[in-house]
Image 1 (tube, rainbow, N blue to C red):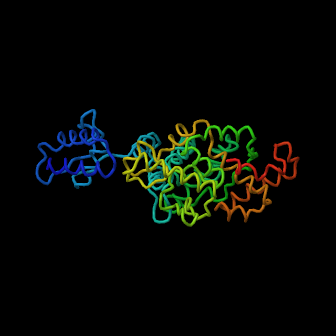
Image 2 (tube, rainbow, N blue to C red; image 1 turned 90 degrees about the vertical axis):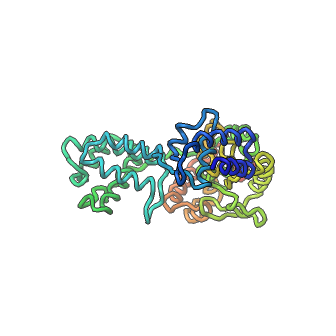
Length: 379
């Protein structure tokens, strides 16, 4: 078994571009874990993490064991552990329903996709205080009324109220769907309108983004946000299969678009560098780094925001692109929805902001007519 595992480690290492030291360290870990394993036995993932030598990479050892069908994943994900801890602090009458709701948000179901782990934490951070307030006079979600919901939302304003409203709607929609409540108290709940402070980026902010994007991967990310209005998550999830260089097409978050000339050039340059740095990587994501090149997952959000482009807001660049399209082509929500694959609500929001800017003195924002089409061209 040890000889087979060592041979498999060398083959995987050659296939995925592991260094010779990584391969030897993986074999050291396999020796520790497989010695004494009975015929037909399997190694638990928690044991890999606990018993592997300090210099050994647990993911590489686990990858070899999994390829030989010798690995059992008995670990609990970080998010699941957080759900158990957090929900455990809620009153008994509410905890079970909230736990079930969070699990559906995490895993999805037949009619809903899994939500981002950050969304779970944000939603729970607004739901938990409301439940603590209700628990003084109520014993379960079934007893909550629309008046109770309004009372919990009363101290909140602006985006905090909007987010809390969305979280409570999600919770009670789940509860009604699964017959945990008789009626949904958030059915007629409306969030107060937001005085949106979205304005176009200044020339100084644009120059700062240009100066920060000096490497090929940095430049690619900024161009995808500035021209194709790609969200950070969509950039991280972009795979090689989503890019059709020959036909100048790109699929971002399921939406196929014509590949712009700047993005085409940036992709060609980045692919050359990617191929030279990690020629044997099994990772199919467009954007990879030295950590993800050995696996198949996307780069982390922290890497994208904190290491690749520190101090640069890709969301702000993306919003600026959409707003400038609305200003240049006219405030038409249908046009924005078709060009950027936006929902009707989001497209209408950008349209309203563009119309407000056009109705005011456009020059006070530094947006003279000659500058409208220049922002993305400069990139």
